[in-house]
Every structure is written in C-alpha cells, then in structure tokens.
Length: 503
Ligand code: BES
Ligand code: MN
Ligand code: ZN
Image (cartoon, rainbow, N blue to C red):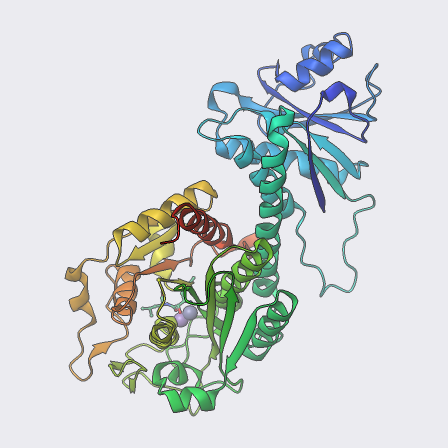
C-alpha cells in the first residue's frame, strides 16, 4: 500500500473516494460539513433521513454527491464526540479501510486524520492511521492454493493534515510509520509460518537476508560454537530436537563505533511441545508462535535500519525447537549456563528462560547501554494481563518508565510488574544454584526473577508478550507486537541522544 500526505479542502479532492467522519447522533465532523456546504446540504439530508447515525465503526458509501470532484464519499461513524479517544480513532480508521478495500475504490483521501483526539497530535494520528491500515489489509494466504483475491483492492491512501505548515512533519512521521508497519508485517509473517517451515535454520536464513537488504551484519552461532562457549542451558533445550539450534546476532551500526549499543533479545522457540514435560494437545499448534519474540526483534531491526536511526543496535535471537525424545533434557537434569550458574530443570516446559539466560550472558561482551528481552514466556502473564498489555519487568526504574511511555505513545502498551527480591526465594533448589520454575504463584514474576540473575551487569528490561503476540480463535494470527513499542523507544532514544551535545 502506498501512503502520502496532503492538505486541502475535502470538496476539492479529485479522488475515487473522500472519507469523512460523522459523530453520534448525526453530527457532521468539520470535513463532512465542508462537503455538505459544497453539496448544498445533500449530506445533512441523507444523515437526517437516518441512514447514518454515527455509531462507531458504521460506514455509508455515497455516490453522485453534486458539486464534488470525487467519485464517492465514505461516511464513517465515530461514536459520541465526547468519547472520541485513541481506541475510537483506531476503530474508525479500521472500519474505513475495510469498507474501502471491499468496495470499488482503489485510492482514497482520508480526512479522519484531522479529527481531534485528546492528548494526541496530527503526527500521532497519521502514524496510527498507517499502522491500522497496514494491519487491516494484512493477509497471510501464501500457503493456500487459491489466495483470496479482492477484485479492486485499495492501493493508495492519502492522509490529510489541516494546514500546509504540518506537511513536512507529517511526511517524516509517515515514513517512520511505514518502516514500523513493515517491521510488524515481517514479524507477523514469521510468526504465522507453520513450524515445519519456520525452523531455527529458516529464521537464521531470514535474518541473513534482512541484514543483507539493510546493510547490517549477521552472524549465526551454531551448536558447536555454543558448546565451545559453554551455553549449557540453550543446548539443553535443543537436545530433543532433530533441528539444530542457532543463535542469531544481527548488528546495526548507525552511530559512532564507540557508542554503547542497545541489545534486543528475542525468544525463538519455533515450536514448544513442552519437551518431556509435554503440553496437552488442545491448541498446541499455537506454540508455533513461541518464536514471536525473535520475530519482533528481527522486525524491529529491519525498521531501525530503514529509519537509519543514529544508534547502535544489536538484535539477538536464540532459536531452537523444544521437543521430547530419547536425548531430550529430563526433569531433574542439572545444566551449567554460560554465566557459570547451575540450573535444575524441574520442568522442561519452562524452556524460554533457559535459552534466554545464555543469550543474556552472551550480551555482556557487547558492553550494552541497555538490554531488552522479548519473550512469549509465561501462561501466567496471560492470566495477569490478558491480551491487552505486555508484562514489563526491569532492574532499572528509568528504563521501565521510558518503555512504558514508548508503549503508550505507540498504542502498544505495557504494564509495569514487580521484580521484588521477595519473589526470588521461589527459585530455590536443593541441588543446583536455582530451579527453572518457581511454582504456581506469580508465575510471570518468578520467570522474570530467573532472567534477572543473568542480567546483573547491565540495565535490563524483560517484556513478557505471551498474551499479546498472537490472537487465537477465528482471527488466529500473529500481531507483530511489540515492534511499535520497541521502535518508538529507539526513536525516542535516538532523539534524546541527539539533543545532548557531544562533549
Ligand atoms: N511458551 C510457553 C508460554 C506460553 C504458554 C505462552 C501459553 C502463551 C500461551 C512457555 O514456554 C511455557 O510453557 N511456560 C510455562 C512455564 C511453567 C512450566 C513454569 C507456562 O507458562 O505454563
Ligand atoms: Mn514451554
Ligand atoms: Zn515456550
């Protein structure tokens, strides 16, 4: 899809379709009013007849409105004006895009981006329109023998700003949002691919391809390298699988080589059976999404490179299957991690923390300014926060605040969870330095506590995306979260550093 920005009067647009909003009950938005004036009251006549109440998400497509240069006008219900906030704005955009794509307009000029949204400016409205539009039109049908074809698909969207003065800033934010949207789509594609295609080797190949297209470097550590380094935890998870594990290391250099990098670490379990602690059969297919952390890291790296942020960023993804088998790790096995600490594996289904702990220790060599890991880590996080918020844990209050703020700005929100010492004792083991599980209470917190023991030498945050990385049911599919939050955090970090003059 092609996006562009423009400013101008709605009634003067030469377009297949002009999109304007109507509040409940039957109150025209400013853009709808200009059209109504030009059309000598036609719009208000139609609305008064009761064809468009303004209910949020409803749409009405009109043809042959007199004195306009466009072929059609699409009215979009916005709900009550007093209640029009971020969610309503996104819902209205989604409804508009859906209708445009399902009807004949292959191109449209959207005035919804001029609607006031509390706490948000034109830039936010543009960025969100791009993200919502890309998301709404996303399909994953490459493995169907007859891809569902839309007869006249929406190809080109023009988003409007109120004045010419806003064009330049709008243009810049549009390019950024497009990079983020592409990063999300990449993350979704990788997540949606079946686990017989998206193996650790496939992820490594994709990482190499992304690096090549975006002038990043890519290194893949093989099992033998992990052996040499002493990554006993990552290797323990891989033992049951016929697919060799990989540790992907992508490096983007946008700043001085001496500048400390930010490291992103994504959990890349391409299929989680639970191992010997086998999961129940119901919905086990969804454990193909257990590599969505790795996918989000790859998507974010691609976006960062496309935006050419003046930062150094390293993307790491430990990736393996978690399978049962004659060689698989057993409950009770004790493994030695790269950090030197020993772990008693009491449950082989708590494998994410085992691959992440070695990747976190591996980060130390990069002397990172910040490390952020992203993982579909615990079912307990889904119970705590549902499918709305990412669980955020950190050993640094300021970093936690920055990430929460980035998630809020990107409408990809996280909730700060506690990482108090009091929880650490649940990981006690009689036979090793720690156990890999902490019992039923506070499952997402004890998982984070486990990781914190491998993140002592840097500022670190952990994002548990178990509830937000994919949707189940009829709309089953990866969401591409938290690419927007991570990208926003990096954008803001790049801006903050640009403001501080070099010494
Ligand atoms: N990948 C799962 C977490 C998960 C489960 C995410 C369901 C989304 C939906 C993870 O590897 C896992 O199995 N965690 C266990 C940990 C437990 C054994 C301590 C869990 O959450 O049940
Ligand atoms: Mn598991
Ligand atoms: Zn898992």
